Amino acid sequence: MSLPQDLSKFDALVEIIARLRAPDGCPWDREQTHATLRENLLSECYEVLEALDDEDSARLCEELGDLLLQITLHAQIARDSGEFEIDDVIKGIATKIVRRHPHIFGSTKVKDAEEVMHNWEELKREEREEGASMLEGVPKSMPALAYAYEISRRAVRVGFEWEDIGGVIDKLAEEIREIKDSASREEKEQEFGDLLFTLVNVARWEGIDAEAALLEANRKFYKRFAYMEELCRQRGLNFPELSFKEKEDLWEEAKREAQA
Image 1 (tube, rainbow, N blue to C red):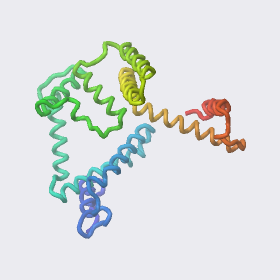
Image 2 (image 1 turned 135 degrees about the vertical axis):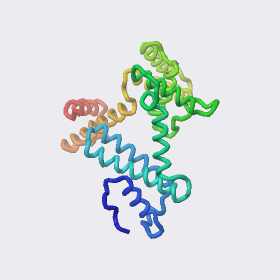
Image 3 (image 1 turned 120 degrees about the horizontal axis):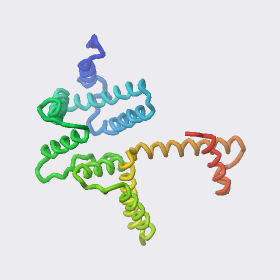
Image 4 (image 1 turned 60 degrees about the vertical axis):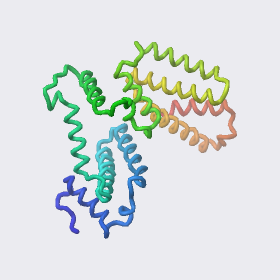
């Protein structure tokens, strides 16, 4: 099989993936299933997010391509097993977007983005099966912080919200007290979960992405700790043998010198 003439066309990618999955195609690609590719898909999503966070447009372009490869490969696997085809994927999302934008493709009038989101939720509610929770569509396999943000955000859209951020801060203080007052490890674990959930709501009120904020904190800790290790190597020190005060002093030096 010859290569498609124009590799910039989406159909060319579909054709290439189909060739890889053909009976005489690539042994590795032919072995893949939806299940075996699960971690690959998740990894590519994270790499796209990292490129976004780094504001690296060249890398973003590359990572979006890798993600598109995963989508196309899943669609080809589905086609091979008679589940659906890539055209069904495209038609499905295009139909959904048109249906949920009646202010663009219909006669509905809106005054701002807030009203757009309100209408969006109403349309999604109409699409749900009778009796289904509005939280049901949030993937439970999402990272816990992102999941907490999404389910709380959906609850807010129907008015389940504190009057102001002061209420959230009061709730945060309450959860800290409850951790301190917990008598067992099981109770502490439950209260700690409640504390994290409340912190996510504090972030939501402040317009902070909790997942991104924790990733940045992780990055800073990694950089500063690695700097401490390097200082020890340069000075002939054995880090585990240092006193807590000596480690604290190294940490403060790392904070000054290894600026994030």
